[in-house]
Image (cartoon, rainbow, N blue to C red):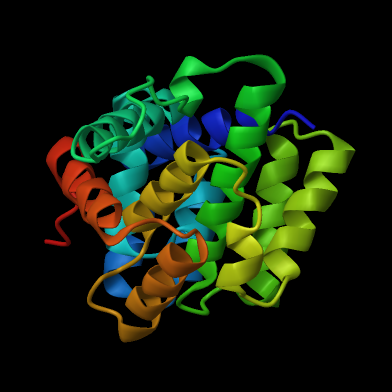
Length: 233
């Protein structure tokens, strides 16, 4: 599976959709509380494949985060922010080896793919935290993922992830290193709406399951706010 390529495409096409599909799609989203209305109107007007990402990440905050990630370089941006947060935290830990964090932006091949798959799993989990992905939305997302050229194995994996009951412990189990755990948590911070009790509770439990120290969690959240504006207004 080429998860890294799919994740990059989702971020980049999401940016194009959010940045360029003004007019009918945006008006429909503003005029309706149904998240599908804007998507369907946009699709009728030739919306880009990024509609899959904007539908998956349903909150206003998440849509802004997606656009910012693409603007700053997609997946690499997440790795850079995770690197800075992890490196800052590492420097405060007495007796801890000060080796450069191996974040996704510094990896290639199988290691980069493993990190990308874990990050995508975290994104899907965070998107499900508000319970907004129903069967009809899943069908639409599956169709858009197919348009992005995902191979059959990856498409099946993506569909399985969408269909799983939300379980922070299961999401966290994808982590294989402290840096990967930090990236997964950072990706989730970019998606959840902190004003939602349910989403914030999910994020807190995910941090616990990832076994990240409170000081590192705080550093990740602070770096996310500094690097990528996440205001909901």
